[in-house]
Image 1 (spheres, rainbow, N blue to C red):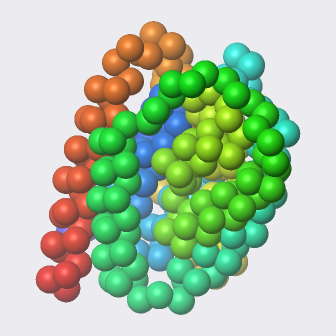
Image 2 (cartoon, one colour):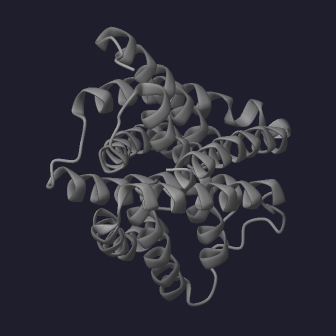
Length: 259
């Protein structure tokens, strides 16, 4: 199906808004929808091109959404820099390997990852225990967890917030609201590394990326504004997003296994 450029631009903005809203509101989960949205809604046909494009959009949106969280004091900067320092190395390694994998096989693996992410989201995040920051040996823990999260983020071209938020809480002991704010720095850093790696191979649709970015900034600011107001219903929002991810993951799995 050939899509009119104006309609494609509008769809890119709408899809970007959804991703940005999720990134700002729950700190992750939504960015994993960027690649399937680009493939099956916006109309980007090549899987590697969709991954590279989504990485550009997620990087810009994450840094834009970081601003309101930083202003609210929800970012632990020392932990953010340490987590990102090793994570970008992992993101480079992961994205380099991802480019070497056949596109259809990569989408099958991506669909499986979506189902894993949905399962983790449905389990819920345990934000109890309060703020225990900083934990003993925090920086070595942050470095190890950061490298692992960055590698997975780079391989699939995702922000990795669903890993980064609990990873930050586990490694440093920060409260969940601070982990959500702090995670956006690493999401942006990992996605930037992946985007640069894919762009070097010509695997970025810049027009679609611009539309995704424009929508993501709008959705992100709305999500950040609603983060406190919707705190009591965040568990319900996690379930809704998780079920959406399950639906898309199953669709991708069936479509690509059938070839």
